[in-house]
Length: 326
Image 1 (cartoon, helix red, strand yellow):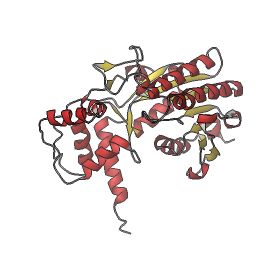
Image 2 (tube, helix red, strand yellow):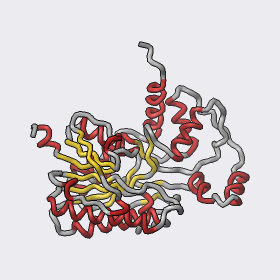
Image 3 (cartoon, one colour):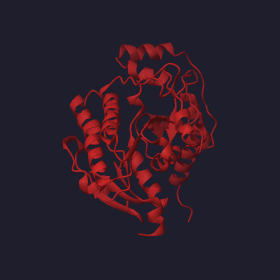
Image 4 (cartoon, helix red, strand yellow):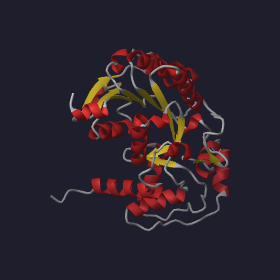
């Protein structure tokens, strides 16, 4: 083992082919970690120096974690169901997001792993919107099977590792953005790329978001800092943004004017309510602002604010799309 390996250690990253996992595996390896990247299909894991692809079983049907955690100094657990939908049974959420964490914690404890970092979710703390600024001091009140399963996974991790030499912490990120993102942030990116003015100036609700650059710094901190021991932390960029802020920042990254104007919102709100899509309106027009004071008190520092990260993301993606001049 090289001096760098001894310094950084060996880390198992589950969910290595997901949006966050792909980025984190490459970054940890570049930082000097020996990364065991685990996914259902290890052939989909991009190789490289310091990266070993390993197969991960179906979390819904139980996994033998022992060969995966053997020899690891740390575990970063990303694998799981990462969205809320009524199409997935509650029992499946429980099996994947909670029971699999319990069995992972047992195997990590028995193998003498130094620390397990669980990527939980803001939905373990609250619903899609919340009044005021949210902090860890508020009791968690998840509103759906996804959020309840994430909170249950955190509690199982804490219970299994209580009193053991294996440390743990959980991170509760808000919506994450960056290259390869899907769902709502991808939709906003597509809107930002359109040439048209957009009538979203009236969407003043403030939302906390999290860029991949800050996520990497937070995971590195969670893996290495003794200050985060045995706690769960809200995780976001330092400044909340509105929908119009997001699009304006994206267009800034594209070297374009914001092109945003205001129209009355009542018709859109009524149409969504009538169509049974009231939850969509809550995500668009409801506040979800989190405080990162607890995580920052442990020594974590964000590397960029939300608007900077959004603009940089779009600028870098546009550069990558541009045809080579060589």
